[in-house]
Length: 234
Image 1 (cartoon, one colour):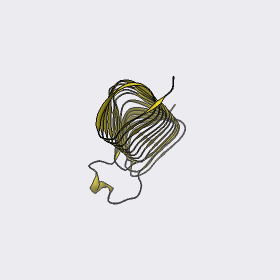
Image 2 (cartoon, one colour):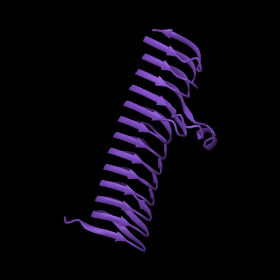
Image 3 (cartoon, one colour):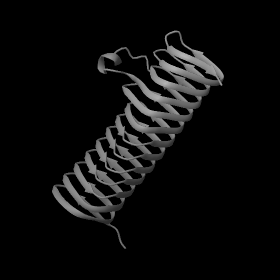
Image 4 (cartoon, helix red, strand yellow):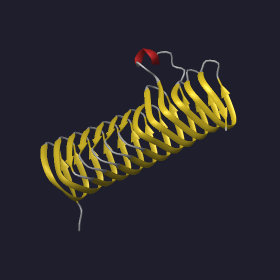
């Protein structure tokens, strides 16, 4: 079946289906599942269904009631996803809300992101703020603290959390730091992190941390500006 383009420049609505390009630069509503090559939301859109796309770019505002499956996702506006997201690469430069889980090869957060379920990736790079209701699991986790970051549990091979030396951060945000119940990995470096348990092979607790218990296998270091309840070699 030949795929046609769907363009809504003013106010309009359309049915879901197979499309080449779906572009909304005005205010549009789509009823049903959408399967397209390119989804481009520059205006205000509501999609009542699931979305499958090669490329999905949101520079405006979109609300999807279902799941999103795509190769590449870029959110530089405001996006609310009612289901799960599955993709290769996703970049949050604006505000993103995911009611389900997020599974990707690469996750980049430069804005604000709220994920209700788990987040799984090979690379997780955050330079904004995020809340993850479940497990953050990635091979390589890099977090630069520019706001409040939170996950129930964090697991990975390499986990690095640092706060850039910008003095005005505490004036801009009520709390700049990372909060998690448990953090487990191979090599762990933490700054300004609050956690109950940190477990790893090589663990470095940097300044501003408050950790109830550290369990390590080979190496443990603790900055004098950190608070650690107990630490044990296992």
